[in-house]
View (cartoon, each protein chain N blue to C red):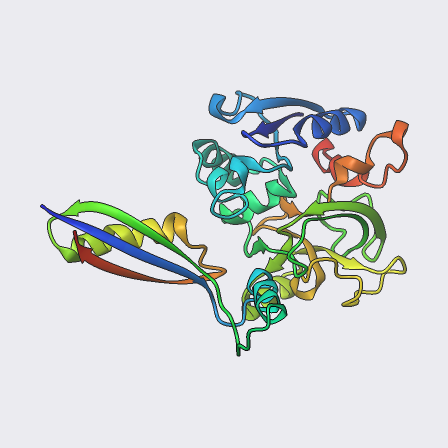
Length: 226
Length: 83
C-alpha cells in the first residue's frame, strides 16, 4: 500500500501525515499536486493546511485543481481517500462527500483538544474502534462548522454516513461539546462509499508514540487493509 | 461581440449561520448604532465579451455554479450590464 499525501501550495500538515502513516506501517510519500498521482497509488490523503491561502472559501481552489480529477477517478475505482481538516474542506468542495465545512460559530480560528464519538465502526477508518468509542483528538480550524440542508443531513444519518460526532469525554453528544457549531455535532463523514472519508480533527497529530497519545492511529490504519 | 460587465452577488442561503456578519453587527452596536440585522455577501465583477446578453449570462452563471458559489451554502444573483 503506497499512500500519496498530496501537497498544495499552503498545505502544512503533509509531512506530519506522512510520518504518522509510516508510524503505523503504511508506506506514504509526498506528491506535489502539479506532478499528478504516481502510478500504483493505492491510497490518498488530502492533508491539512491552508491551500491557496483559503482564497474564496477554504478548499475551493484546490478542489478545482487537475489532481482532484485524478483523485475522483481513483476513488471511483475503490482507492481509499482521507481528507483531514483543509483536506476535508477540499473534499466537500469537490463533492467527494456531501455538505460543506464553513466558518466556525465563534468566527475564530480554534486550536484545541476535543472528543469525538465513533458513530459507525463499520468503515475502514473506524474498524479499530467500537461504535460509541470516544477519541480525544485535536482540531485546528477556522472553518470547520459542518453545514448541510436538514433533509440531506437526515439522509446521511439514515444511511449511517456520519463517521464521528463531537462529544463530551463521556461520549455524550451535547451542544456544549460542539466546538464549532457543526450541525448535529458532525466532525467527519463518508462519501457514497465508505472508503472516502472527510474529517476536521487531526488524527496525524495524535499518532506518534514519541510525543504522547496514539489515539489517531486507528483511523490512519484505514489504509493498512484488513 | 458586445462588451459586458457581469455582477455576481453570492450570499448565504437563508438559515445558514453567518458568524462574521453577527460579529460585525455586534461591533456596530458597540459603536452606538441601532440596527435590526446585518447580512454580508460577496460580489464579483466579471468583464467579458459575448454575442448577446443571454450568452453572457449563461457563461457567468456557469462560472458561478462551478466556482464562485457553493450550492450547499449559497444563493446567487447575476446582473449583466453593457460596458
